[in-house]
Length: 328
Ligand code: UDP
Image 1 (tube, rainbow, N blue to C red):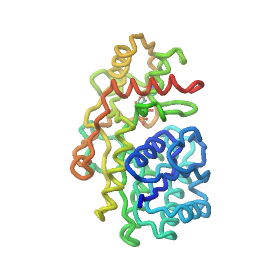
Image 2 (cartoon, protein in one colour):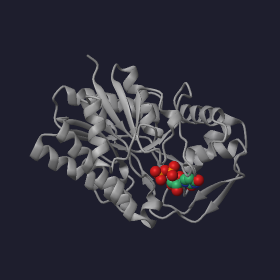
Image 3 (cartoon, protein in one colour):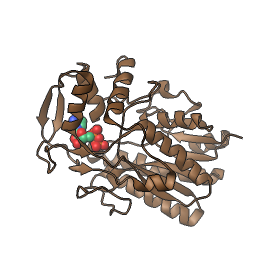
């Protein structure tokens, strides 16, 4: 019989792609989301339960009613800058939230969980590709909440045998190839959708936050991974845990970084449009370069990014943005 998986945050950007990937792989996703930043329109695969991860009663009821056998935990607040201004909300949602999820799992006899972690747990890396053994030195409250969640998983594994896969996302970008789901935040602050919105004339110019970083062109370097690849990694991780394998923490990146200027150049070539850019001061909490050493995911989870070229990211991002009127 097909396994039912609770996807917290399944109405959000990454969670909706994960729900689709799970459904395509024979799982039955059940989306649990408070719709604070998620969208009901993005819940297309499986049932929807409107609820908050900080509401233990509702959460455990959802797990019990749907006979859940595993959890993908994506629900979180995810802006570095906002976490510096409002750490209270971040510790509440990103630490109390996963604690509730783990408690509810125990109450319902669920023992496997795949979670959204982040390369923000590493903090300022020295520019070399980041392996999973790179010391964890988060520099923002957001990164620290993900670090605490990972520690909580270790402790719950040791004490209660809850097995987990913490997937440390680098920069998720792009959208579903069928434009069934995509990046839809209000306001939208991420680089790829901002580039697309500038190309479409929905915003007059792209602000580049800092051109004086110690990188070849002075702009920040990030490892952009297509969201469809990220979603597939959750399916692989769930299968890995189902095989009884031990808990793990794994980078999800491509191993190749691009600067902001390189992204703009690629977008100008692809969309055949000039993208007006204005240099602004650095954004608080931005490391100069974050690039994954992506080899561990390949050996452990048999995962490789297959649609993470810049062209695929920009083309699918553009298609989704165009198909969603009012998405700005
Ligand atoms: N960025 C930028 N202009 C924007 C949005 C982002 O220059 O309008 C920069 C940001 O400072 C960072 C990189 O692009 O160096 C990626 O930012 P994003 O918010 O997409 O992801 P993050 O790395 O913060 O997770």
